[in-house]
Length: 322
Figure 1 (spheres, one colour):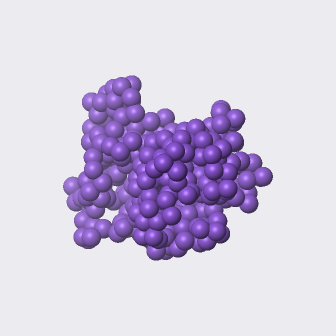
Figure 2 (tube, rainbow, N blue to C red):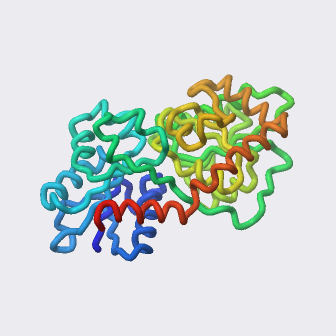
Figure 3 (cartoon, one colour):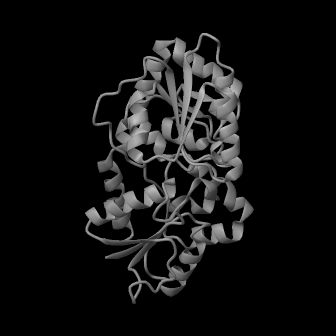
């Protein structure tokens, strides 16, 4: 079967949407299908069009979704609900976003609490598919000089990207905390803010955009990872950290709770650097707490296994009659 996989993120992008698209293409190919990744598809690719479309992002891929649905109303159409679809665009751009959701035969979501945020009429279409990753190939060796905390992701509003740096300013004098941020700035303003924070905050290091192997190398030397987002559709960086054995400290939003569970102990109130600073100091000064977070994350590891993600796709395709 020919599958058109549409994502708004271009070939050179290291954004989560592109990473998800590439991994899904590999899974679908392993299931025996031919997959073409593009940024837009008007339904005429390869002459007769694809047998099925998988669209990443309901709002950003709305034109492709509409064109494919109009041209091939009887062919399967799957839409991934991104975090911004769920928590922003269905409210700010409801016409396009909700139309994409209406046209889809299935709505893939990446965490367990999406049902709380989308209109109830879409509940029957929702399918949770957890994103997989791979464990480290070498043992972790956390820094002995610093209590090193990793933040991985583009600097942008949705990620509340500098919150961990702000928290680091509040660390006790005795703390050895160092925050290492990996990810490019969304625009010049974010780049200026990050550079200014580096200049004033000796506990903050910004490395910019790096390849995936450098993220994993940073995981190996980090004592913990912080995900500080104000909205998330279910970040792959969380599953990566868990499968690498890195304890996660997370903002208490649905996108994180839906991955880590209601009973996870590593949450802090979103946008609250004081509370985050207190949790970082607890993680540094209380080895039992850090061990507890590691163990709680470890119990989630089976959710993010590659075989489980492939099985979820196999089951979804079967339900769609493919």
